[in-house]
Image (tube, rainbow, N blue to C red; front, side, top):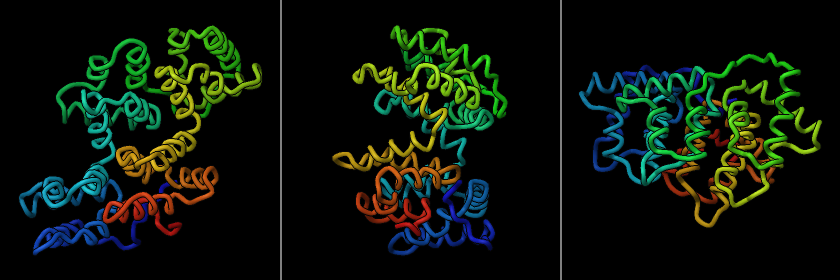
Length: 316
């Protein structure tokens, strides 16, 4: 369930564009006005505002925001304003670059989006970067990470609820054998994780737990210093319990010594229109404090205000 709050009566894209233009003019930028508009429009509405703004004022809205804003607030608002598929394409491209590389961001995009959404991301990637996401991931990764990430970003999983219990039992045994022998990069293990539907994987992991007495994510904790194993374990968790994955990510990026604004921004901007309500509930259950209060404690200024609006700030 999303946390984005869109007013019952939404102004036209022309009216929103006019107000945004006013926010940029004068002696100082009116950040509050910008937040009041963009933080309360859905993806399609934001795209129409961008189109209307460009047609009316001959200027790209994102460039105007970039010129007027700074720091974490600028980064968060620019990411939020983008259409989800374009945003993911930008995040994925950054994740393949030398100084911003992140196998985790690539895994997140591949595993937490639907097959159709991932297809749209790859189309947006083609348009913006004139190459494919798959080729960039293959080129900028190596070894076991490449072996896992390329099929993950290439996948087009079945999205239905149907499961085959016979297959689940058989593949649970395969997974247990590979995990027990520490063959974490085995082709069969990778095949199961990267191609089966989320419903089928959930059934397989349940069979694993019932048959062998441990959750697969627990058995994948054998070597806590193995970075590939950490990524594989996170992949299994995100594919079956996304709210638990994102809760832990938020907990780590907020509670660590110095907030990880990059991760915080990414989670809030990518999940606010999807399942952030469930993630908030999991966060409060796990930490005995609301996500809103945690954000208030660790962030400041317009960045804090934007995040609170996106999470539905009644709990703050």
